[in-house]
Image 1: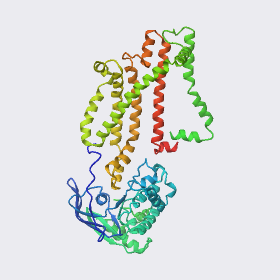
Image 2: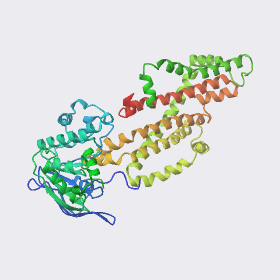
Image 3: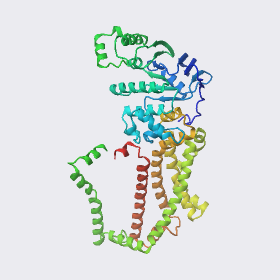
Image 4: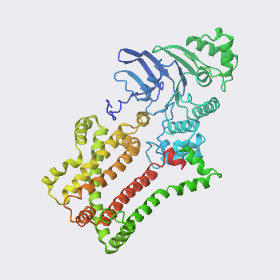
Length: 269
Length: 269
């Protein structure tokens, strides 16, 4: 109650021009009180590049995403993004009082907004749920609507904030395929925030590891897609886990067994 | 609630359920019979309480002569006039106070002070100010209904999920669109609770306000009946007051079912 509900919208970030990278962040620092969440951060994302940002809880990855999304202001700092940005949140954040297609069309201008929403929903395979209420959707369906709502804006930068974390393993794999095919077709720059190492390796061109507010490691992944969980995959995985302070090679057999049972590669910290 | 729904669908249970449903009428009917019996045998004298049959007879007579409908119309007009003023004032105050910090600072303390004064205690003051015509009656109802509307709508506006507002803003909604698409629909359930309260309060205050030297209306009928010890007319008016309350409740429920069709509870049923 302390803060007013309606704040002035944060000032728009500087927009990147038609040439050069889609995202450029230079020496970005963000603090909450005394705590520096992000410190002297430098990130560049090329047009159409798929970047995964990996980090433990509290490493500042969501803070970075919110800044790039324009939800948090970054006054006086160099944060350049495309004008058209869209976010897919971990919780789908659909408006429960609007039918599915109206959620997708939210904020669109023009008479063709329904047609555009329908096209986007068809792309994510939900053309049969156009008039459903969000409360009747499954978790996976809600996230697909959320993806459609992001894509319909034709974003130059698509921000994914742990969008699959709440989904079951099978649905998650299907969503991975969907996101990849949508990315290939629309070619936005993507920043996927996740704490799932396997997810990052399976999807991204480049994986960044965020630790203590800094990029602690960077790994370019050149494996051909679709990426099978083979030896080369495991090599990358071991390297990234080591960067995150999890020594995959030194796991005790019991832990390996647990890994086989739950091969999600999630970091339990 | 869910078990009730299950029972309704289950093919084995409708009979006991029907029997139980009918069972709810037994005790009120029994009470009426005992009352009638008491009146007929002289245990309950007519000047204490008229028999149900006498009440019914009086009811038809008053309806046929037009006495009841005309006075009911006067009372309803009073309640509606007061409620309309209260509704408009409550909505305006709640929106100003709910949507801006400055508005809250300016308005909320006054409303809280107003809340501590029992509305009916203002009756003498209103008579001094407005005389004994229609004005004090309508004003009393208006003043009484402002608060339930204000309080519920205010908390509804403030209680809208901040994550939805954030999502709306990230999709580039303007302030006006944010209010129209996110905040007002989100506050609607609370507003309807306030409206239901306000309808109840308006009837309650109507009863008292009509004791102020009314020359028409249900209160006038009751006052006259009291002077002539016509308990049958008093009971007729009580029944009418009760059905007004029922009608008001039905009205809001219908409104809710239409306006809140997106809620899971309505979707299921």
